[in-house]
Length: 364
Ligand code: SF4
Image (cartoon, rainbow, N blue to C red; front, side, top):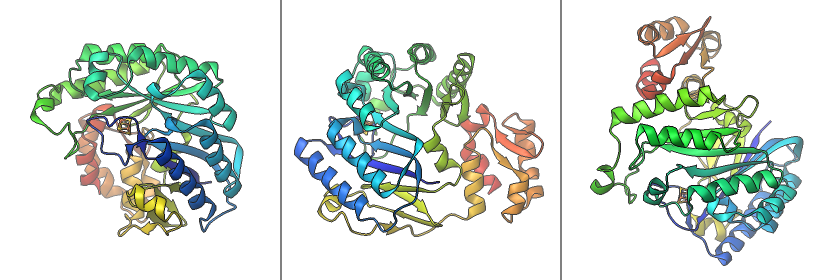
């Protein structure tokens, strides 16, 4: 069953490290965008298929007024009936919510929320350009719980300016003490052309070795606190894995709406260009087809090795690959403790995740 992704390309302030498709919000721009989105979804060529996940990402979807959020959920559910257990997630910036808004979101159908918190240290948050303090982030989690949203995720950033192993582990401790059920720990990547792509910022970053250490110790600390790793950057209490994001890593279908949103449906991959103005002026314009689709086997290996459950030699055979060759490439990584072979199932260890690109390229 497919998942539905909705992109909300607005933020109150641009964080220095971010290259996502978003622009500064004005209430008029958001209103016009919501109207375009509703037209785009209602007029989409496919309808009537059931969906069991709906995900609002951005940008900052929590800039939506509750009535706008409700209108979009309603439009999606008319077009793609949502199952009774549908996971409906919104990403949220802690600096944009209060209890009243989250209660209204809950009423509209939101049952999972993913807060971009990033750190428990206010000096780290300040340098990232976040608009909230850690104490405001904790209040946002409390608002979510009070409004009946118990499935709460938090993003933690690793390898950021000023961060040390101690401050990263303090963040792990404080985040997991806050009552969250899921945590995504992403490593900062300096994107070309962003304000962070500067010598001044690079001089504040921990070294590559320190970042590797921070990642491995974060994995261990989360595990001790009951947050099991299930993907290279994702951890959860049992039963709280992100059902929507798992679709991306297991080759399931999804439909994305809004500029920069990608889809994989009926064996086709297509996307809306990262052009907010173009989307608003012509929301019924057909999405563009991706030029090259990765080979099914390559994609299975690339995506499967992001997940802790890994890839199976049997499936590689079924997809036309050569399991003997794959196993022989992996042997040296297994001996080095970077991979595991559990009865014909190959997976990366946390140490292996740190060098996953090189390993995956060699396997492919
Ligand atoms: S709030 Fe999120 S999407 Fe917006 S600029 Fe910051 S990181 Fe990027």
